[in-house]
Image (cartoon, rainbow, N blue to C red; front, side):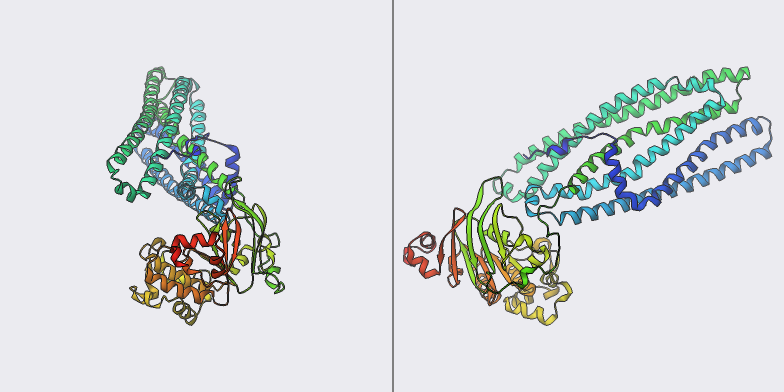
Length: 599
């Protein structure tokens, strides 16, 4: 079972000034909406505080004196106050939601743009599911900060301050009686918030564990079914699900207890007001309307306190999410274009004497010093087709990754057209060096959209047709419902491996790079598809500098040169017949595939 990442178990503070400053920097372009929202709060607070006063006036000045005409005027004013109040509340909710949505739009745009600048090593070390959580769920928590968090807290504080000021202005003795339960309320709030904080942490931890297990199980469902592990997986899921349920119940218990405590203390405060205030009314020190107004103000004082629990959780979740979001945004891209950022680097116009591809004493490791390439050196001349062979794990795929600068070398140099790849603009480099990978990635959309990838509208219909024909993909595309307009599902799951490879060859022909790398392009396909792919590849590499990675030695026997990689370096080089006759590493690989009689 997978365990959650440590950061998924961390629970932050409900307020962090450093993070709030960074959130404000993101929200600053929308400060007009934020200021408008802040401007609406005082108006709402004034109207909220006006209502009990109008009730007091209605009772003392008109009901008790039987002035029904004056009572009608107060009732009309009260109705207008309610109508304006509800209108302001609608406007406030709309403005806050609009602000939150615009902020999360900007955040998601910034996150996605930043993710596109990060190198392959970053994605090797960070699961896609966690990154999606950052872009989707964590950003939503920031939206809640604007719709239900810090802005509404300020509004509650403003209302509560107004209530306290009015109550002391009306009758300071009665206000002190009302405040006598304040210490009890503060103690209850502190106790239940601490308990709720711990229970919230447990919910997050158990939810992270359940999500990790669910993602792993769904991804490996075919293996689970193959080994008949359904019952065991079900029991494991049931246990994790029960743990989450218990944690949720515990969190719900503390939330419910907090609300119940506030309600109980509020009722006790009302009882005190009735007891003491009733005596004041009898003695003539307080009007009956004043007592009713006090009761109304007391209810308005307890409302923001009661909602404190929900707002505390919103603020806490927002701070945790902000920490993760800014932690991701603070990751510096390890691979970038040079400072000059020229689209056409000097490498494009160098002397024709320079090799198209050169590895110069290259050392590379994915982790620490677990070397994949060790002092690896070779050159590929312009227009030359060079094949890379060797046992699994010897660095063949790594070579093509370094050519496109998906990774940077640890030591040494990789040169394209005589210029170190680190001096190339990344866009220009990857436009110059094309790759047909072993696992072809296709996007949701039409076949034509996938073929135009990288050139978009710069491809004419005739050019598209020539590429499809040269790749031997015409018959395959015609067999699809809709032809070029046929819909491709996510990752091309509705197409076979061979069909995806044919489309990849056509796409490479349209992309038309000067240097081409092909990584196991004929692996995992049937003989008929392999024949089509090999024919399409022959047209693709014709007159083009090519580096071909292959396990099937039958596919590269006509290569201009074959490089045999062993222990991270080139151990043998030559044409097929020369290497077979030499009786070395290549001969052993050849005999393993075809037997000694194959020689």
